[in-house]
Image (cartoon, rainbow, N blue to C red; front, side, top):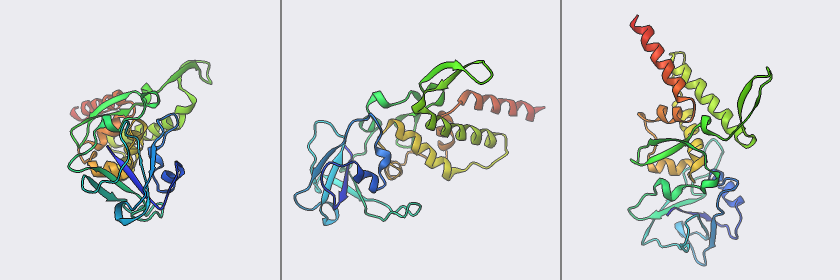
Length: 233
């Protein structure tokens, strides 16, 4: 299981995760994490609390059985290194099942084998919950439900960027795409950027495909085939 340690904090308060830059772990409707205030010191010989979503297990700091990795600095948000620690059993890495959110808040999508060799489900915009209605022109259309709209709008960026890349109109923005696919993966899994980096999930060969999995893949493939036909003429 994955456990987080936040120094100098106590009591059950999700704001502690937010303050540490781990807000991505939280999602409305998902299971509530468990908190355990340490009587002694934890990683780095610091006082604080452990936080985890692992079911049926008591939270404990066991350095002889666990590996603890301090947070990297986040210069974009001016957050320091060591503001949290990630703990895992020695010699083990979490898999998608152990990091999956409550299925009632996950979105359907397309599976992709990522860098750890496991199959992960990237939520797909076409499979978000939709309602049926009419657009401004009075034509029948499917619309994403209200709480999906912000996420749906993010996938529109992915679609437009992927189309531009395939057409040769833009270079692939790997850094922005990397942040985007982490954000999308966090819809279905309790991951943060540091954990994704630790697991080495995304790489040069799967990043564009992972981005494509979140949007209209069929349309992207049609564009690619059209380009192939034009280049062979």
